[in-house]
Each structure stands twice: as structure tokens, then as C-alpha cells.
Image (tube, rainbow, N blue to C red; front, side, top):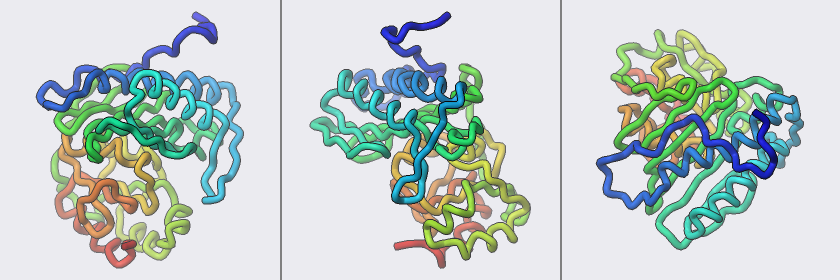
Length: 288
């Protein structure tokens, strides 16, 4: 059924309203609001993607931005200002907005802009929620392929075609020589001044794949790849994963193997000796 422009955006298929029954945080509807906010983003991004309106411009930092990205972030900010006016907002395309509450939203309507621009469906919308500066909830939706993930520090789920699935994780029994390593691409290593380490990783790993951006992290949550390495992240790229990783037992560190929120140079894995293998290679190239 065609929806008129005046109708509210449909709710996303990612169910997030009843995730955390044990935490004592004063959520006050914010967990359910993550689903509403994903729907706001999707109402702008998915129609543009499906109709091929994916033109992009290059920003000063070498990354891409689309009109759909800018429109979606503006709409998400407006929705948050209407529903949670005292909360802070941090996003990629507009200046941060300070809040008066202890809550801050991190939003990225299109993570994987290059994929979006080239009409490859491996892009997604990311939302993280901080309380007192700590990431405590997150959500990811890849609307073009019907995948997502959502959770808090206590409970996390995959979402496949609107249905929740549990996340089964355990320390990886493999070493790097047997592992499938995922990264967004060599160009990000170059942008971070760390291109020298890329061939060393690629030569040591059994397989190196470019299933990057949020799709690679979703694959890690789903247990389909072994380790994700990223050289250049912003908080809105990674903070959605931090609480889900805590709930699921994943290990997320910087390149030195240290836990920090958020890691700008990230290693995410199922833990075990594999994580140590990767950080041993990366540590000499880690930034301060």
C-alpha cells in the first residue's frame, strides 16, 4: 500500500522494546525508540537506494556523503528533538548537540556510503545510546537485505527478516592462519597511515575479505567470520556494537589489545588466541 508523505514512517522490523529486563537504568522508552528511529531513517534511505537516487559527493576527509544520508540524519535529529528533547545527539553530518540529560544518541543513517552509492546492498543504519558517556544499547539495520542486530549490555539478538535470533558465541578455536579476516578495505588503512600492516595481515590470515562496514560486524555477531579489523573509525561507526559485544561475549579492543570506548582502531573477534595473533601484528602500527 502506498503511504502518503504526511503519514508517519513505518516502524522498523528490528524489535528492541523489551530487551533488557534486568538493568536498572531509567530507559523511559528509549529502547523502543531505537526501533522507531531506525524506521525514520529507512523511510529516507531505502526508497532512494531502490530507485537508484544514490549520487554522492566527496567530503574533505575523502569519504562520501549522499543527499539521502543528509536528509535521513536531519529527520532522525528532528524526531529525537521532538521525543527526547533533553538528550544529546552525535552524528556524522551535523555538529553535535549537547543535552541536559545523562543520555546521548549516536546516529549514522548510512554506514557504508560507498556501497550505497554503487547500489550494493551492504549498507546499514546504526544507532548507539550512551548513558553517562558509556555505550549501553545499540541497533543496526541493513534494510536492503533484511538483516539487523539489537541489544544492550545484558542481552543481544540478531534480526533476520524481522525475526529475532539468539547469538551463540564462544572463544575462537582457530589461529590467524586458519581464520577469515574481514576489513572494509585497503584504502582505509592508507587514510589512517597504516597501509604497511595490511599485507602482513593478508599474508598471515587464511582468507581476507572486504565484507566491510556494519555488514562485516554483523557477520561477526552471526558467527560467520572470525575477526574484523578496522583502522579508522568514528564513534558512530562502532559504539552500537560495544554493548552487543559485551552481551554476546565478543572481544572488542584497540590495536594494542586494550579495551576502550570507542576504539578508533578496532579489532573485534570471538576472542581466544586468534585475537592475540591479530593484535601482535597490529600493535607496532597502533596510534597513540
